[in-house]
Length: 226
Image (cartoon, rainbow, N blue to C red; front, side):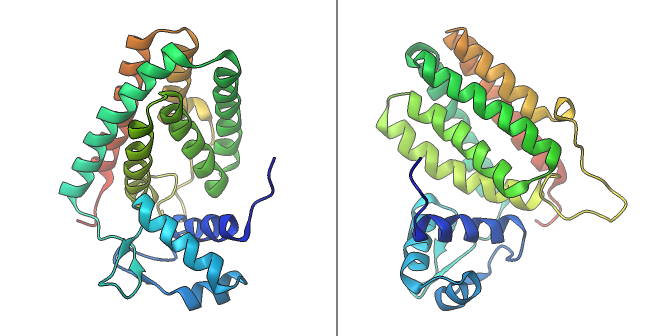
């Protein structure tokens, strides 16, 4: 496996800061401050910020930097409705076109996801979830689906980072669920990958639609900051 570059490290570390809620929606990210905090030069940090802008995780702030987008109910609905359309079609296509090694990689990701859920390792769990969803988008063999699925996936992740129980701040007495069988996301991912492995395009499409829809519905019940 190719060793991560300084830009890769910067991208991962900035995402980790967002996941840990060091920054809030609307906060500006300053290149020089991030470079100092991460112990990296400004160039990889600048490139990582540009990538996060392209992915929709950040947005440009009047041409003088970037910030975490302000989150709104209308934006969340639009993002998740687009994910439902794109990713359900990608899942159907993947069921038809994925090779056996590609399916085995998805199954391996599911195993890793379950282990990380038990351990509560948020940043690594986030990367596995990204690889699973965007991996299925890539298996659609449709460059347009893959490109736009990546952008709306990352935008939707902001809502998950700030409002999902796995990431959101909780009262000290409230503990995380650690049993992956109690995780709706883990169960739905398993159903999705089983459908792709079975070459059942209709079942895979419906499994992805159900999964993204249930994520959206769960978040709407938990959002308290709008």
